[in-house]
Image (cartoon, rainbow, N blue to C red; front, top):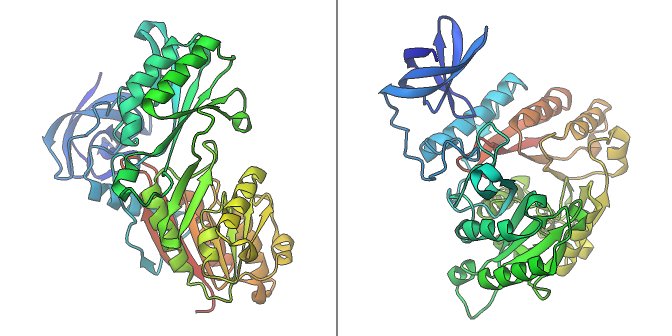
Length: 459
């Protein structure tokens, strides 16, 4: 292997790789931070760039910390654990600003302070790969290794809910004893808030979460397998669901009287039940802060008509409904729309809400005009973004149909690149102003950048 000596690290990218230069070529250096001087073992050498890993430090950064997780460097889940928490936030903020400028040629008029919360034990949703590997002693259960399809050997996870992390070795042992161990490719976990109880404190409630494991099975369980699951469920106070096909086939196996999963939005007095295969945010603490910030930024009036596009199970819709005359939620999944209706109904919000099933990736100017005027809009698209909506809204502006344009639009994004693309359409073609933008630290220690942006017209 080629060794490069004393390379100064000039910047850090979103994958937590240091960037250096050697003989005019960019060198991506794993586990190196801004300002460090490192010796680099080259692992890949191309004509225009090289990749390598730091093997010795001539100068270390003050932002370097010791990773908490014993699996750091093997598991591919948390590439930024060696970076100080505040520095992680600064990197993500820079990524957001860089995308807005380089893709959209935009700078927000002001930056929002980062939304931040607990950085360990925060994750209440995860999909773990299960794989039988003879050479490694049988069943493996965990995330993939870094830049690999192999399953990391894990006996704990510092970002998962502590109760889930604690039971990983026992669950792996259980799955390895099943007769279908080689035909069980995945175990998905969801953790929910317990029902409020006036006899226990909030802290006691948090110690007794609702935990659901959904096992993806490619063959039926035997009676002996079923009994093993029941014993484990009773011992660890968890539920098992079985999924023989797609997500819609997931059904409760045991215990049959199990409480439903739900999460709380305390600021709005909402409790939101959901299925373990429904999409929900993985970080409930940050979700609470995010929903509050989004509703605050909308600046709703009691007479407003609002839209929540990509509404899911009503995460934002029900909160918005607390402060407007009416809100329309639109989502492509019929199952999620039905869940959103149920959530609105249980909180007495039926008269203030309406829900539509629709493909928001294919809407146009006419479809948007047919929905009538919305005073406020909230968009929360998946990684693909909301290009069709951005183009439809901008087309209405260019056609002079200003009466149909919202006064304020809040865009929640899980991909800064598609946010920047859509922001450019809204501003350069639709005449909106990018008032504010900032990051949401939904996934601490990872390279994932969640963000929120505010657009307005007429003010």
